[in-house]
Image 1 (cartoon, rainbow, N blue to C red):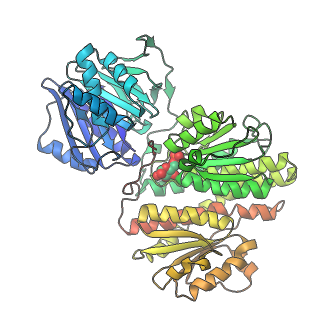
Image 2 (tube, rainbow, N blue to C red):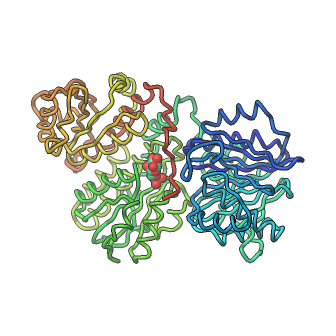
Image 3 (spheres, rainbow, N blue to C red):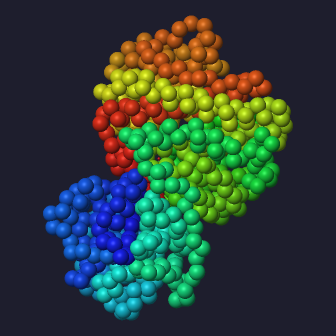
Length: 615
Ligand code: G6P
């Protein structure tokens, strides 16, 4: 979503701000702006659209040199993307950037109008900027004015503020929206996310809620609401600049797909003791029911989790979209478990669901990729996936490692409740650690072949994915991946359900991708395949040699992607379900190549954000 960067120090601020904004581009945005503090007061430049347009504007009328400034990428919530609605929002005294949503902005605006303020934008942020300005006029103290304003505001926010009268200092505060502060060789920084500070330092402070940070060329200071100085622990980023760069790949998405084998090995390896999953620190007893709650791709990993946990361990498992969870008055008991899945750990809906579960007294466990993120900190227990930074908006490697954690958990639960022997559990665990990453690597090696197939779909407008059982779960993710980045409308359907209505949409212009990796259900899916084929659909089948053999007759389709089938002598049937991993990689590559062939901005699809920090 929106991105914040602020720099004050010995160097010119503008290049640092622009570089920071570029590093935050992946979060998704539709306008950008900067404000610089200089001898003539504050200069603000904003532009609708990409950062290139902002840079063009800055080239046409360059601002005077400045060593202190703030920058922002905005993802529109209140008011359309426009120059006027873009941040920073300025008053005669200050300039402010904001991530999040001010819920009571209308009330604040009405109050400020009473004091003579006028409003020009459609944003909630303008109310926040003018509220700080109002208190600054009363107190003449930046820290006090920021605290007074935040005491009034409801909602989520991370603010960066510069004051005309205090050149060289940046003030920052946050509530329910992340913000970090860092020292580097030549100054200090604030940022909404780590990639923006990585070129300068790997050390940072995580700003606690309702704490004001004051940074200048030489220092970073933190103040509590009582005015007392706080000392915060400095944390160190555990990933490198190159991990946050494309390293020769045309897109982050392709790079991240190619990182899947390593991410799987690391994530699975980290959870093993004596070659078995070790969840001692996380699950003390078998929950009566598991509620998996998540958004987007993470929710789709939850679907896989449900299938695996129920198949392996027979523990009843529900999957709920996080934005729906708390509004459906879920029936929760203390002997159940609410399992939150989130790559970023900052998704507002997932965080709200977590808080709802905690308030209901249910134990919570988070599976999160970003260390120290809000979901990770607030859940009772946390299990980290080790995917490394994921930059592309479309999530790929994070999905695979979430599925791997859920598979490990399914094995652990099955072993605990006697549904699986230790030999079977060891066999499956070893398969996850070695055969699965190997098979995923083989699919990555098929990328060029998948590209040729995907390019046949460049002119497609609508498409269906069909499958049964775990293949149906994979279809949900394959379809989401395709539509979010290629803008080809697609729907995932249970293969047996298509005939109950939607098959009326299938024609020779509506291709179908059939996912058939589960031998036990492939024969059934075949009926669906025949039904769409006889309606003229161009048909691509994703399958395995094992499935083809088991069917005994050729699948009536136009094209095939054959992925390696996962096997394990000790537990052949359950191991075959793990074919989900190479299969999803093929679906991700298919979506990637379809979008790249359309010449689209694969890593930053329109209107989408990497981490959605508003409800
Ligand atoms: C956004 C992103 C998706 C992601 C979802 C959940 O919608 O565009 O790629 O799957 O948020 O994100 P999380 O960080 O909670 O996994």
